[in-house]
Length: 281
Image (spheres, rainbow, N blue to C red):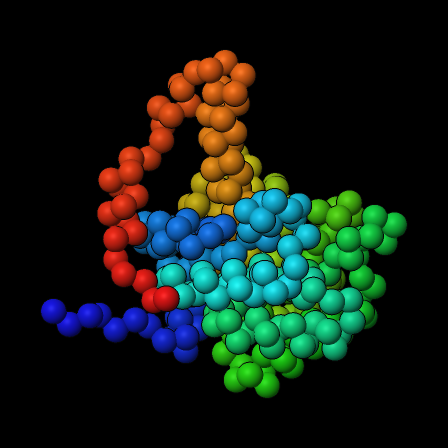
């Protein structure tokens, strides 16, 4: 039997751009190769890494995983799957534009189909880069991608709502500036209401907008699509769900000597079947 030909990196990147041209799709966030393969098996057309989900597998807090570990993780996700992978590349792992460009080139080399750059600093006293600095960092990422061939999709992220500055006008100003600096898709995590979402989507059009849904909401995918959102990611939510089940079962065992938490466990046979296909070394 002939082994099916796997899509090339160029194929994945081409498909990723196509997904952003029309409609609305979910891009869930695996935290390791196994969760990526499972999500692919459900038919999701693309996946995105999660900085928090990966960091927790390394016993680190979000934003504390070192660059080389993140790059290795991205390579693993790309190798394990046949769908486009978008990298949650935090702030580019550098404060200056030159450093962002250098590290983005490394990320592109992992084979990811897209990557995002945040404008948050991690400094509570000044949580966001000044707009001119943020734009320079985004433009450096764009130039690094273009030097590598230009087919990796660039996502510009305005972190206002997560950084303690939930100002819609500032968010829109930043997103428009990032579009002007070369972002292919725009992202403002932390938006929750229909009014906020619709306002931002209209303001950045025709650029596609990514919505983060990281907790329960009364919005459905149909609702979100009707608001004009192009793609929906879930950040570390699925990783937190997995941790929640694990922590509950482990706590019951440690504190009460009970095995009730195993009731919802996936069967070993199911997992073995899922991962039975040979993988590249």
